[in-house]
Length: 86
Image 1 (cartoon, rainbow, N blue to C red):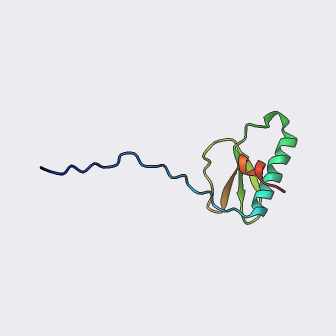
Image 2 (cartoon, helix red, strand yellow):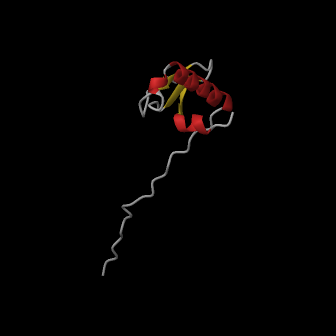
Image 3 (cartoon, one colour):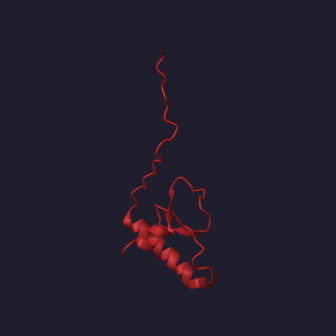
C-alpha cells in the first residue's frame, strides 16, 4: 500500500503589517486632510488617505485605493489619520 500525501490547499492569509510611521508624518497628513476638507466641504468622506513626502511633509489627498507613490513618499490611510490622537 502506498501512503498518499495530502497537500494543504488552504493557507491562512497573512495580513501585511502596517509599517511604523513617524507621528510627525501622521500629524502632517492629518493637517493636510483637514485643510482640504475645510476648503472643499462637498468632497468630505470620499478620500482614501494622504500621500505625503517624508522629507518636507508636503502631501496630497488621494481618492483611489492603491496609489502609485514616489520612493520618498508614503501613503497614510484615512482610518489611520482619523484614529491618531493629536
